[in-house]
Image 1 (cartoon, rainbow, N blue to C red):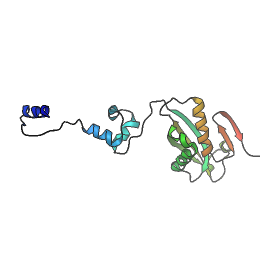
Image 2 (cartoon, rainbow, N blue to C red):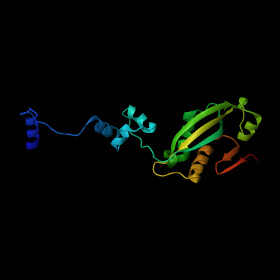
Image 3 (cartoon, one colour):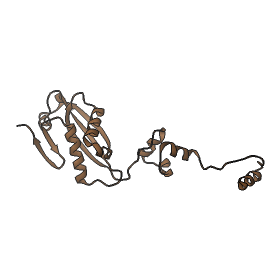
Image 4 (cartoon, one colour):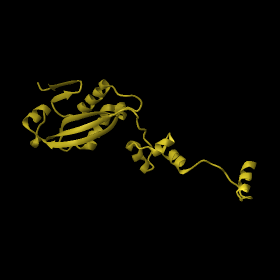
Amino acid sequence: MELIGAVLQAAGLAGFHGLALGMGLDRLLMLTKGIPDIRLLRSNDPRVSSQMLDLAPYRPVSAMPPVRRDLSIAVAVDDDEETLGDRVREALGDDADRVEEVVVLSATPYGDLSAPARVRLGARAGQKNMLIRVVLRDLAETLTDEQANELRDRVYGALHQSTAHQWGRDTAIVSLET
């Protein structure tokens, strides 16, 4: 306590009491959001910097490389990104945290599809073709092609509503019609 008194007296603040606490705004934000490393506050990675715009809890970001898989699927006309995202999370269960992003790149109504596209997809009236991109990334390890294709096939199986399938592990079209 004598040291603090001496510092305050040297500053011309004799008679005042003080408490030194290294609690700047950066540290307060880290505590509030649960940020583990102060360097994250100045990160240029958009996955990190976009999280610094509010006080929502920090979601860890992986330094591992992303794996992208594009899927062409037949779905009901009223399916949207939210519905697809729910199906992906449900299908992957504990592995859902390996999915960084599911984005719809395009949607084409059944009537606008060419005949070969309808056959390839196994699409029916009342459906549409959606091209989606799934970005996979594990927090702790680099995904192998085998792991990524297994996850891709689980996502594909949960989303594609048809009798014709194109699996990641085997690019041949497989028809389930008998």
